[in-house]
Length: 191
Image (tube, rainbow, N blue to C red):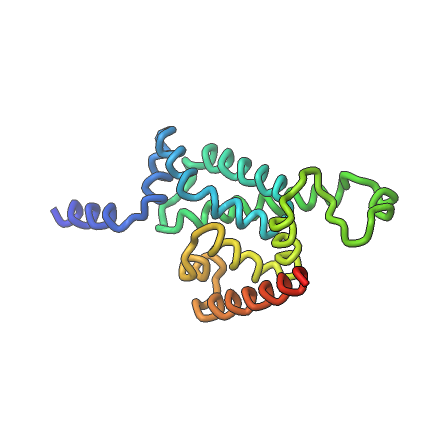
């Protein structure tokens, strides 16, 4: 009887993402779809913070969910499903960066011919979005990740601190500092 109560309490305390990941273990496609809806924005934001390219971030996000689907049977519930997904995303980002470093898409001669300060991108971005991406590029990787995970990924500061392994106060101070820097950079770009 006591084990039943303990199991019921554990089930109640699990996050929805954790519950959905456990459903994925059984091949539940609706659980997978719902998990994607709840977490895709955060995964994309995190990938964008590392890669700096929206198209690459989108591809890494898709790869992350494919890997999660394939690896769902290995997921061990510890109440940190977003950390598990972000770890997969981070690994995919770094694999992509290694591939790009080892096999550059454009030659160095072509790169030298580019106009200084022009962003190399295969897609046209709205001017405001372009300004924001350039401003984010001036932040360090950790600050950029914190800002994007919070503002675009809708993660709470406490969740970000837990995932990155920092005290909450560190995440909060880096977030505030990053926002101040972004504000100054964007104000300078508008003038």
